[in-house]
Length: 354
Image (tube, rainbow, N blue to C red; front, side, top):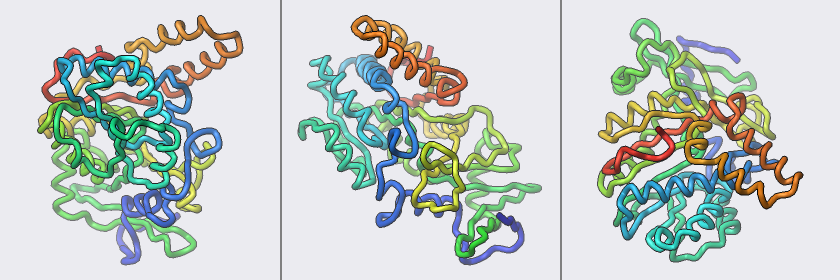
């Protein structure tokens, strides 16, 4: 790959445009044409690893409803439900708590028509309790809890190079066999926006989730209007770094991002400090960011596993322990994945963060 900071090619596309087209093009985009989840797909998420993960998220949602003083109506919105694995277990968990279940409306926010079909086949839920949405217009009454596992990392990002107070945006030219990088002087509005974030100061290379923040703006408006919050779990880092974290995954291995881009996932590591700063700018409260290991252990995942083991044979116990190890081990998902909760009009004493 060649990089040129001086010569911008008019056929080039910005990183987020390339990313967005590869994943979400309606005719040939990655999420429009295939089911990438599970062993037979390209990657595995926490809900695919063990049902116990989704059970814990369900218990956390119910506890947060209690912190809201058990409103008669609560709106739950899963952001990017994937293959429906988490939603299926959540509904099963919620049914064990009749008072909560009767008050809850469950919305699945999904843009891929293919994934909606896959989710509906897996969930088989009553139409008066579960709704598929592509915007948030139907969410009108009662507090709302948004939650997403590996949602934010799938939203395209922009990349910038900085040099002596100048900002240059990265573009790709994929028209040629040898893919080239080009840098074009960033718009002044983009420069002002980037400079407004303390968490981006001093960086020579910046990854900025402009489209992700646009998604969050819609969510924050609902939270501000109705009260509630948003829980995000994703892989990422806390301290801002000069790193290009853009990567492509196919059949559970990293691959060349430009080789068959419509057939592989494209993702990046989420900057959680930047995410927290954005929520604070929008006047939401933010709990201290914790690791997935910390959150799940505080929510009692080990105790829940021990209860399940009592009715399992030795083979099943070993299987559960391996799955739990993958979720919690610091060298696997335990530390790499972070958990953030931004909220309004809820008691600060939220489970899983203290």
